[in-house]
Image (tube, rainbow, N blue to C red):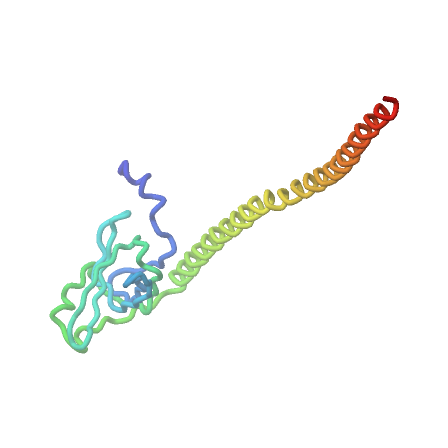
Length: 202
């Protein structure tokens, strides 16, 4: 075990199906052009799978307009949106470079028939991947409402806190204004009446 395996572990993808050289696969690749993202499907035969861990790659070969095209993909790259296994081939080599010199029927790969045990293992693996995906989606869904609730709670509390303050300030401010208005004329009236009485006595 390498020291970097612990660092690479969170980045390894577990949602991809099991495949090996000789299998025909559809690789859904994310392509970004002019700020837009689209999915491009590359279908062909897996002629090699090499490396391990986060550096593992696989090469897919197809015939396009009579010309052989090979493309190498990093297995754990986020640019791979989805990978589908179309058919499984029966081959006795790990590297199928001999397909480059063959044309037509000679380049065909015999299809591999799966036994009951292999089918059960594949079904179990797919069920585990689906359960892991559902669990991850459930965790994200649980986190999202919690964030929404916490963000809404202060907003809901703010109007309630502001409304009573506004009401109390309005209720306290109105009588204060009325008393001050009432007191000012009373003082003014007293000031006006006192000099008038002094003038009368004088």
